[in-house]
Image (cartoon, rainbow, N blue to C red; front, side, top):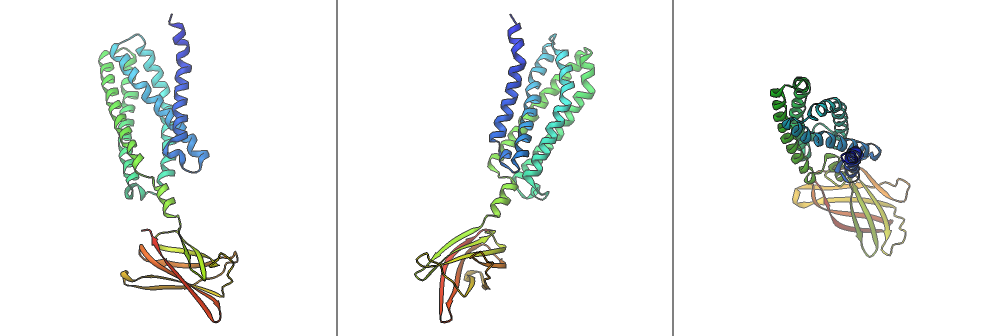
Length: 295
């Protein structure tokens, strides 16, 4: 009567492991990172290895505690299989950490990095305990030493507690964007549309935070028609900062836009941007609007 369940147990277990990996690869925070061809397989392997290791600990501990006939073969199979599982787990985790964190400084400077350091500390403890179990206790437990088996059961219990702590730390990543995402957000431009009766402009600052930026502008007439300006000057002012207005003459890169390179916006906050458009030798149009520069 046990033949049916035993025959289907392994395929069901493999399907369950694959399901865990696929679910994480499809929706996990790290799977959204680029390059997708690398991160999604790494997330899949990471999830499968975690499920394989953690999923075996509880039944192994219960089998050893109950001193069942399956305990010794179970322990032997586990001790043989766990080494490649941990190796793949560590390799995939390292790849994902490098992609997500990007720079060593981000380990300390960001909440995501600090959570990763806590997780790594717990992992060192977990791997050390697992190594002791594997190379110090397993052989004696397989030989039938009851005392060593009891020690192994207690050690497995501690492993499970550490695993739960690691899961708790990893859950905190839901509220802490990785440095990779922060860098992408920081590189996003700030855009402003300035519209007046005689002229209008679409202005972008890239990146949209304080520091070195590039300003690009598309100048049009007030009714959305072409405007062939003779000269365009960008003026940035922030009177409450005590900084002199920044005035730069724009150049034409040849794509129909105007561009200001080597512009440094010294402080974040709300700036007033003015564009002086020389329409002809006798006509100057000035349009302005506020723009918020990120820190």
